[in-house]
Structures are given as structure tokens and as C-alpha cells.
Amino acid sequence: MTVMVTVQPVGWVGTWHENPQPQWIIPLSGRWFVESMDGTCVEMGTGELSFGGDQHCRELQGKRGHRSGTVGDVSAVLMVIQFDGAPAPASPCGFR
Image 1 (tube, rainbow, N blue to C red):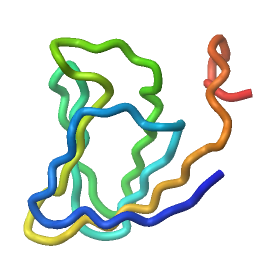
Image 2 (image 1 turned 90 degrees about the vertical axis):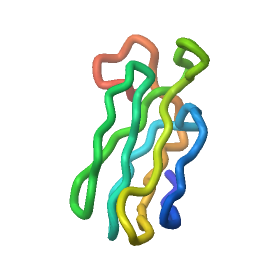
Image 3 (image 1 turned 120 degrees about the horizontal axis):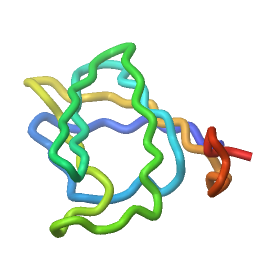
Image 4 (image 1 turned 90 degrees about the horizontal axis):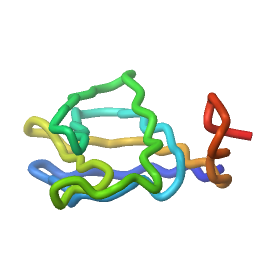
């Protein structure tokens, strides 16, 4: 797996995309949001976890995967733990 830390500056909103690999995202400071293709939007802060597993999804109304961005007036610092292997297609838990 790969572990990285990313900083989303104040006001940053990303474009629609899929996670490159299954990954856990752990906010270390600040707040951020994730919006899914159906319009559901979840805000998270320090200590809350998000699992990104939207690889190979279908486009819906010009959207594919999710988009995310920073919430509030401080940068969001996120630790990302990205798995090297792709998920197993028919596995209940998604991994071999």
C-alpha cells in the first residue's frame, strides 16, 4: 500500500473523478466534503474515516465517481492509505 498526506487549500473543490485505487482517507486537521454522483454530500473532520472504492463506475449526467473539497476557513490535511491491489470483483468485502 501507499501512504501519503495531502493538503487541500481553503476554497479548493476538485473535479469529478474516481479513486485510482481503493483507499482510506483520514482527515488529520480541517474539514472536507465528498459528493457522490447522486448528489449526496458528506462533510468530515478530524478522526472521521472515508473509504474510497468507486473505481470503474459508470458516468451519470456528466459525473463519474465523486468530487471533494475543503470546508471552512482552514486547509484540510488528509492522510490517504491507498491499496496497491485492485478489488476482487465478486468478493463481498472487495479484496482478495
